Length: 95
Image (cartoon, rainbow, N blue to C red; front, top):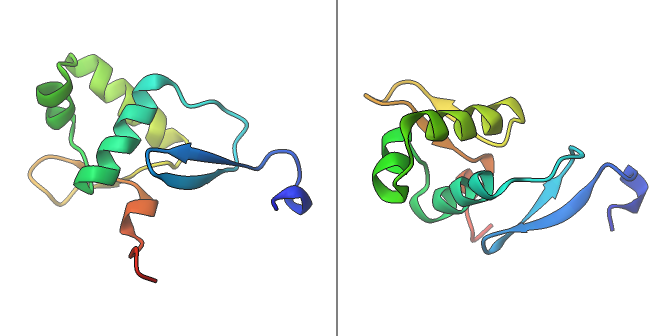
């Protein structure tokens, strides 16, 4: 139970995983779509979102920036194109 942590915490389902939401904000459809893609692929890039979802560049960049602002994704700037990872995707499933 998250009760002792206060009303700002809740458990939400994103794809097949449970995540703890510690910010009083609803995820919009685009944000949920990106987090689900990260669960499947491990990470996303803006061009992946554009190619696979048919999004325009500003839409892909906006949703990524929103997720970065809320610390729901981390950026890897060492790849040829920036890659965006979810901290939950970095946890081994068999722990």
